[in-house]
Length: 207
Ligand code: ITT
Image 1 (cartoon, protein in one colour):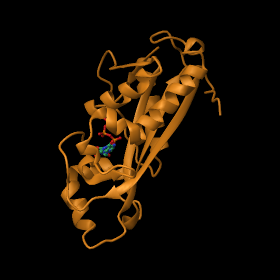
Image 2: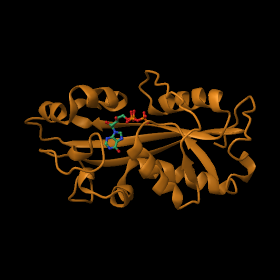
Image 3: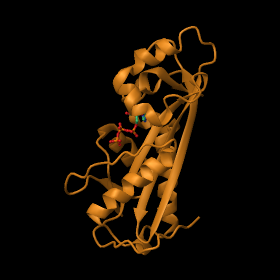
Image 4: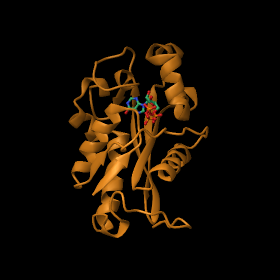
C-alpha cells in the first residue's frame, strides 16, 4: 500500500519510510506541493490531524501528516508543540542555556501521526524518554538530535544512524503503530488504494 506523507522534512521521510517498510507500506511525496497547515494547539494530535485533513481536501487520497515535539521536564514541557519555532529561534544552544545549572535533565520526544485512509481517520502516537546532554554531540539527524540522548543508549540521536535512531525514536514507534493498524486492516485492502479514496462523512474511527 502507498500513502502520501505531507512534510517538508526529508529526515522525517527517511525515518518513517524505514519504520513502515517492515509493514510493506511505501511513503511517497504528494504529486504536487501541498502546504502543511500548522494550527496553534497544545495537542500534537490536533496539529497533525488538522494538517492531514487540510491536505486530504486537496489530494483526495490516503495520506499521513506528523507533528512532533521535545518536552523538557525542567522547563515545564517547553518547547513541546512550539518546538519548530523554538528550534528556529533559540536553537540547541538556546535550550542548553535555559538548562544551565539544572540537575533535572529528563525530557521526552512525542510524535503524533495522523492518517486519513478513507473511510477512516486515526492518530497514532509514539514517545521516547531521555536526557538533555550538557553539550551538543554528533552531526547526523536534525533539530534537537544533538542534545537528546535516549534512555538505554550512551549516544545522542545525532550520533546514530537512522536504523539505530529508529530503535528508540518517538517517530518510529508512532509509524510502527500505524503500520500494525494498516496490517490489521488487511494491508489497506479495506481502505481504498492511493488515488481512489473518497472520504465518506462522517469520519469513522476504529477506536
Ligand atoms: P514538517 O514539515 O513535517 O512540519 P518539521 O521539521 O517542521 O517538519 P515538526 O513541526 O513536527 O516538524 O517538528 C517540530 C520540531 O521539533 C522540528 O523542527 C525539530 O526541531 C524538532 N523535532 C521533531 N522531531 C525531532 C527529532 O526526531 N529529532 C530532533 N528534533 C526533532
